[in-house]
Amino acid sequence: MSRKAASKPLIRGVGFDPLFVRPVAPCRFDPRVAHRLSIGRRHEETNAWGERCGSGAIALFLFPLGDSFFSRPTVDRIVMLGFVGIVLSLSLLMYLAYRNVSVLVLAPLCAMLAVLLDGQLPVLASYTQIFMVSVGQFIASYFPLFLLGAIFGKLMEDSGAAARIADVMVRAVGRERTILAIVLSCVVLTYGGVSLFVVVFAVFPLSRSLFEQADIPRRLIPASIGLGSFTFTMTAMPGTVQIQNQIPMQFFRTNAFAAPGLGLIASAVMLWLGMTWLNRQAAKARLNGEGFEGQLGSGRSQPPEVAAAASRGAAWLAFLPILCVLVLNFVFSRFVIPGSDTAYLAEPQFGQTELAKVLGNWSTILSLVGALAVTILIYFRDLERLKGSLSDGAKAS
Image (tube, rainbow, N blue to C red; front, side, top):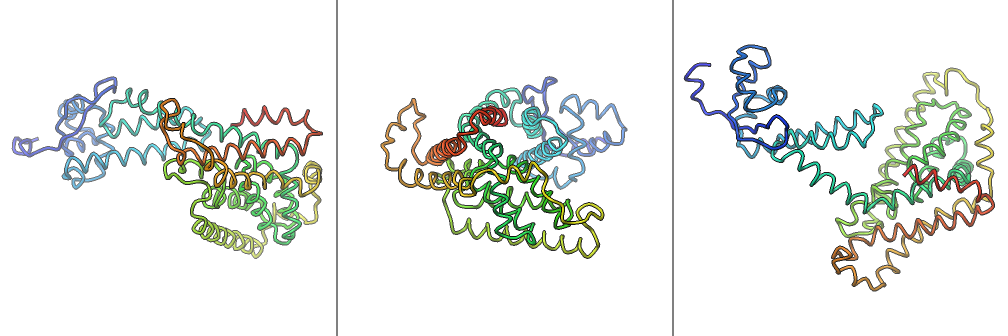
């Protein structure tokens, strides 16, 4: 590097000590040095810079951003680095999670990667004093919802109520509209509080049988279940007790039935778009001669385990726990809890909070407890067998 070039103002970065425990004194960083680092030349310059500024991998990561990035004000660069760290960490988390790597391991590692790339906070302190404290608060707030939802879903599955509901929906809509029947079955179950993952395992056997009878490609089964389970009933339908709808309530001080008009409109749009795509894919497959799996004939009967599960008990009894969740949630959130004396919430031992922040959680917990009690009463004859469902549901939470 020439003396003239060396005299040009260089940008300021943040380096780390060898243990990555805290930021060290700011260093001077020239993107041209990073370029030489990337092509393996002028090692004496780049190594000296690397000793001061930390890992050269960060420099290689930033170099493709171009000179315009390095000419921005320091605050803009800090914000950009933080944003890049968040996006990179989330992308890595999703990729490795789909590769069957435990989220319990990935979550802290990816969070610390974002802190490391941001470079404004000490890593170990961020882990122990910020990340783990937030994890503890999340578990304290939402563990009852995870636990009760998982137990309720397992009871609905093992009692045969979930399969019975799916069978009723298929008979009501008609087997010629198999895709819509499966979607609506998932809608009823997830809207009624059954865990998303339980719905997948409860509805899939029936879906497989119906798709084979209708000679619809089996590759559309996940999309059909996903449309009914992982879209509007998870986020948009008024009153849904899924955890994704529960988390924002304490921040916005609302209940599960907030903005019902917008929720219904969004749900209708999601359902219409999803069904349009699924029906087009099924029609395209039919034109191309694609069946369920190769050239299988239709008319195959349901598997014995599906038929047995779908024939247990009266249909209205299977729907009763679902109805209890919705009705009890509405009654508790609108009348019972708001009408109670909750002035004690302002005391320090109760977190000095207010009713609006806990109303959604309380009403959901009480509605799920009521639905569990109703389910156990309905299927009391199978209580010995359902005892295992309680344990399995608790483990699955």
